[in-house]
Amino acid sequence: MCNKINWEIVVDMLQQIAETLERIRLSFATVPNSDFFDASVEGLEKLDAISMKLLAIGEILKRIDQKTNKLLFSQYPEIDWAGFIGLRNVIAHGYFNLDPVRIFEICSKETYPLELVIKKIIEDLKYKTF
Image (cartoon, rainbow, N blue to C red; front, side, top):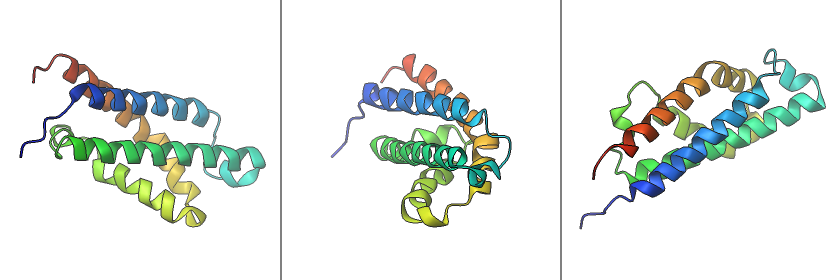
């Protein structure tokens, strides 16, 4: 049985990710270093909010990967897709052991490249015929 991929739904999901990544970038803009997350109530709230957004992104990436039979993301090897999908599990199942340093690193080094590639995939899918 062949499952037909609904690319409109995939694009909608990718757009949700792009919007969430923009919100992470805006929220993270005022975080000077990883110690900020533990230094105040505001820092802890930002850590919580950013972590929940990263969890949501991981969940949507996982769904897209399933819907596209693991074919879409393999065309964009510059991103550690398994790492972002796995981050969802780390946050969901190990929340009380969450590493603020790692979240800071992800936000400062990995979310912007992910955002660029997500936007590229959206553009690529707009012009692809299936």
